[in-house]
Length: 460
Image 1 (cartoon, rainbow, N blue to C red):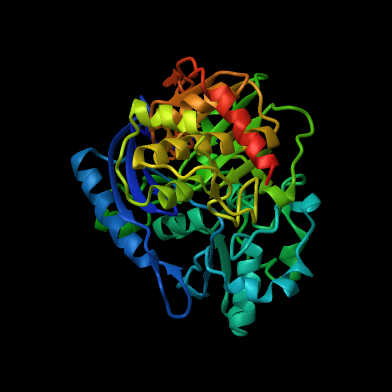
Image 2 (image 1 turned 90 degrees about the vertical axis):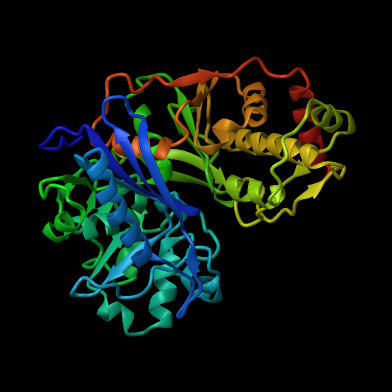
């Protein structure tokens, strides 16, 4: 990976997830977060369509960078963002149009015409997804909705590189964001797919770089506003789920799977079973890692499902809640979010309605672990499994997952795997493989519960 020209003791990481935007300050020696500030990633309703608040994020990031630098000093900047997002720029560098929220279903209105031009799964490793989850579908819809947009667009860049552009003035895409079910990338050949020419954007799509490529030094105006040195290096950036994979790219020959949790639960496998059964109908796909290599992956919207079923409750399951869930066979069957995951278009149902919030949340945790296990099976996962992100704090989820996997399940001690992985694009310490806790032996009830859940699924 490219090495910056200065010592990177403190690395500021712009980390924009679907739910929150944050700036984290990572200690380059210990790879721990020294400070984190956040703001909601609220979608603006429009006009002209639901879109992200890029100007609001930019003001927040500039203010936070200045505060971090004044308090601690900032030596380098890395960027990680959610995928399924693209930014169109005019000649002068201003937005050609607002950045579309990928959950907006407008592109579905002309899905039939898009399906006629999109490449096959065999070319892109990208499943057909609803709304704007395929970036190609976003672009097709945007150009159809505004006939002047294609001509007005001078540059097209993936989302992490938008922040890199604001910071440095330099243009790029990164291979992980292009390889995130966009339909725009051929992961096998490491080049744009045939769709890029069909959309007429071959000369507009910024060049693809590895995530660790140093995009450039800080723009002088940004330097004056934040107080950071103008020679502060800015890394190209990375898709957030792939950031969780960065510490394991040099894992050797041992198989390993990483489960990145957040709004999305994304399971990525390195060195898994040969020829995993990737099924475009079950939300499996080929991601592309920071080195540009294809990675079998599967996912479901686990964090969103957690929030839907939790419904604002802060209840913690008691031992009695747990006992009742097992005794009464209280189970949540998929899918809470029907547009994604290994059981698409199946509607959720309870086998037995939970009687308390604690029972509901406990059964929900087991459901999330069972869904994760299905995804790992689809990617050919075997051997060690590392869980990163918010679900690390859910011992019921981890316990059930540990009972399901043949290899060891470990939880990253840092709950911000995306920020740390993005920081490692700048500087990867020698001890980056440490910092995990092995899960305790699983509850004896878990295997039976898992079999009952599978049986209930088969009867639907």
